[in-house]
Length: 570
Image 1: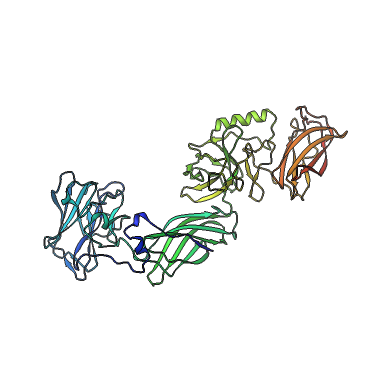
Image 2 (image 1 turned 90 degrees about the vertical axis):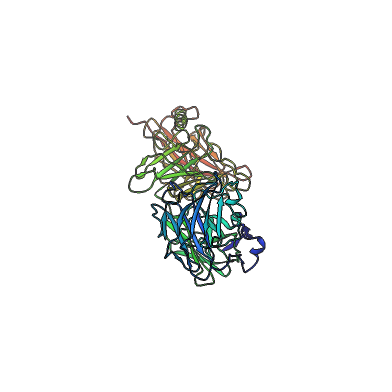
């Protein structure tokens, strides 16, 4: 499947006019045959400059050029056109037609250089010039230069951490600002390829897959950063061992486009993804790294997320589903619009979970107060831990989106290992109710009467038929004895929700356990054998009765089960 948006001109590649983008042929003005010019300059490499600066020359002609007597000179832009020699060509320095000559700084550890000298270039405003054997000069200036003797036409603004590179190689109109572009450093190699496609952005939908053989869409923004139009090209998207191909529409030089390709990866794991591009010519090929995609559940994954808490702040629950302890130190969280934020350096045992909170103290206080007020959980949760920086989650969808937010779990390389979409469709997150993983790892609203189960992994749910009601353990003795009654419901298709009450054998309601209108599907309700006033009920028989909420607002008869409250064990 392939979709393409209208191509746009890249501002950084504005060397080509839009009119040229419509032509099949790109025509470049070039210096006279045999002329040697400065082709690339790196005066401010990342980190320390010493040993990493370089100047590259190119022979734009069709005959070899003897560089003996050529001089490379430098001028400090703050001092004016005062030149000092950095390199002088020696006998035997011959530059082949269309060849490159690399002059590198002392201590150079990059690709082989033809000369190594102390360059001592500065970060600007400054200039260098190549004085040829015949006395003519090629001059390049950068920064806010006050002296016109330090540049041709207009000085280039500069390139901190990158290179100034002629586009295309050897292109010279005697205007530094027009002839040079900011580029990745390519010492001793061509600055620009004739055939080159660059990935500007990639977005996967969904960001991670729960299982193989499900559709995965790659939305790619691609730019033609080569020197000529790309036509009759084929794209091949590979994720693991699965692939899909499509034709790339005609893409002029200096333009970009959006392409969407869909495939269904057959393998599980954290799979490498790449894009192969094949043009019409034998040499017209390139390969783009698209990172990695998680197919199938990761060992450490999200198990519950509270994005709109009634109190205590936002939190999420992570579970280690593997067989060995796992540290969270190399994992991170982010929301849809934010940056990755490191998780705390905590170890999670196999089969265990960890509660990570926006504010651990506030979250723990709220949880303790809720339990003291009669809320029931299926476990005794441990205190949560805080993150140094929390990815604050939206509760409503911003303009142009059909979901409120997403929470991503990723590794140190930024690969998404797991994610949850919040408020999908409605664009709103339910207040005071988390989303949690069901048995099949899909996400659903929490079914607990507390609205969430922080720090507690749900026990395996029984397989119920539509409309069925299941109790465990039965009999039980309440919170003073062997714990809590777990009431499992299976809301049938077509029902909007449920209402659950407990009656004594004389037909009087002793406990209203509430309900919801979250649609069909499984629910879990907890009961502590207390009545609505919080008093422990006497041992004996009781009846749990569920009714289904209808779309029109009424109730339909559901299921009922006899349960037994027994004496508390000593």
